[in-house]
Length: 516
Ligand code: NDP
Image (cartoon, rainbow, N blue to C red; front, side):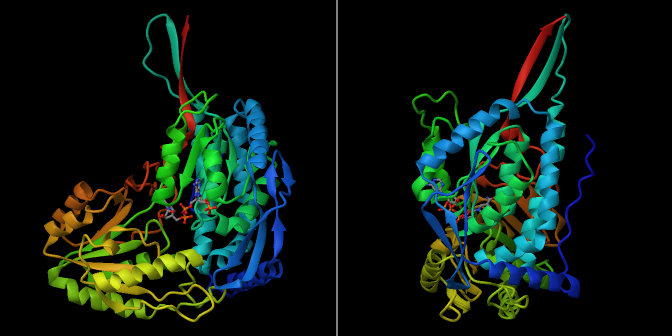
């Protein structure tokens, strides 16, 4: 099978009248479908579960975006039956056949691009560009992992010894669980699911509850592609209710999780415990939070640094694992940099992102709103509030871009993941001090440096302890196939999604030796 050469999708240009009007059309069509009910998808059938998750618009929580079937242990058992049954044949299917399904899903997703974009505007408050970046990334993962499946299917030829033929093949591992976060509700959900499936495994996908309508839209696309029954199962439900059951089940062969540190650690602990009847050690793939920093020194282009910082800190309301939540500026340029960052952040338009002009939307939920505003109160005691700090309006979950200066490197707002539009600016004596502060959190996901000093760039490459390092550019927006993504330390198991190592996590190597 010959696949088209891999190329990253381009983001739509919403300044062009054509793309803008298509998006407006999609927004009004999706709005007309508000309040619809979506089912679970198990063993190739859409299933009603009786109970429902209610998903609301964070820009106006009185608007119900949709209802989604809430699965219980009964439906999870049915999904395991279907997945195990499907695995018996799917595991022996050709990699080229599996890759072809991914390419087909990518094509349908591309055709549904405006529609998916519009649901992300309504269900999680993304602006149009962020939403389209999410779908573009999902399409990229599908195409990229299709290529990767073909590459891994060749195995490799180890050293040979006389009288034998020795080979190594990669084989799938079994039926597993995929648990994505809400913040990349198309890209991460699709990426983890597609990687597992194209490697020859079968999947139970549990979407994040506050993004479960989008999850259902993606599930519809997977079902439309016509995968054999039971290869892909969609089992929405509350993580706190069915999460443990999915993770603990002796039938679970692997868990691919992306989300918060606390939930990730809980999954790690529960999955490690052997359950009666369990025949394997569960494979656990965890991608968790961050406390990502940008260092700026006295040689840096301060305008470029301020621009990169503001985009990284406030894009998607700061709700990216890669978001810049700490700036570490050396003393010599500290005040000047704060001025430049504040000037830019002041110009950000915050509001309902169904209007293209609003760059920042609401934060994702009432729970997120309370957590973030709680941290803002802590910040007022720990630092000096130089911008924002307030709610906007009293309907949706809108929070102003917020900046704290003179934040101590060990204070809570400099150490704990806030996951919102709150930036802490820390003063470092010099570059050496900045390196120490950079590495002083338990996380290690993304980070960056703005400097013109070649020696310091070299030091950043060697000493900044993060999975994704960016030099003289923003620290968000990793591209599939270009910047494999995953973090160190408490940021996860460094799975490097979108890279050449990723599919291996869903495979096991079989060494075969034949006497000749
Ligand atoms: P959560 O950890 O709250 O939720 C993630 C997923 O876990 C959801 O599907 C959730 O379901 C589920 N879940 C909740 N409790 C359990 C449980 N006990 N057992 C099993 N599953 C459970 O994270 P968010 O969705 O709020 O996402 C934000 C977090 O994700 C941030 O920390 C961010 O940094 C991180 N993230 C990391 C990335 C990375 O690549 N490192 C990328 C993107 C985000 P439910 O919604 O029903 O509660």
